[in-house]
Length: 173
Image (cartoon, rainbow, N blue to C red; front, side):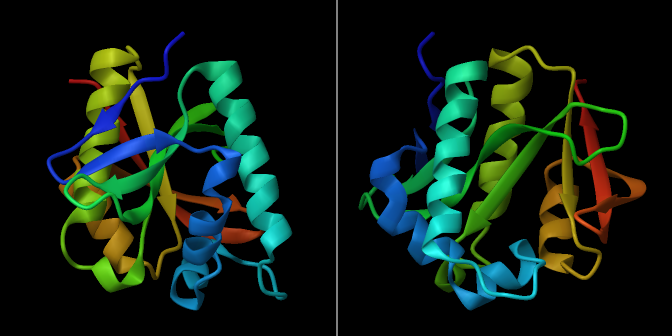
């Protein structure tokens, strides 16, 4: 199965692969990013990035979709990571989650919303999914706003990795 291509007006996604380690490390090890993505007391490491890449590659192989490294369509510069992945974060469900992370100096430009909308369109129109979830920490107002702009609706809270997270859902129309 050919990996689905994610394209938005300003971004193009490449399936995450080991050759993206340096760019992904720059993103995921940034203190402003791991403030929202990293919940453990010790800071994330390069090994964490490598393990995530191994998991992402295996996800692509098993399911035919996953997370992309996002590039600016005009310049080719890395602007973030995002896409769709199965998650066990929702108790009693094996749900597909829409996820996104944008490099901090590009926050506030609408790229996360563009990514979320692109992922939702791909999930429903090309993969035939009937629902997508998204989760975040309650204090992450920016991510919650992205979810709302992308048509997700709040569905209470869940415990994920020992912390309360807000659960959002978007059903196929």
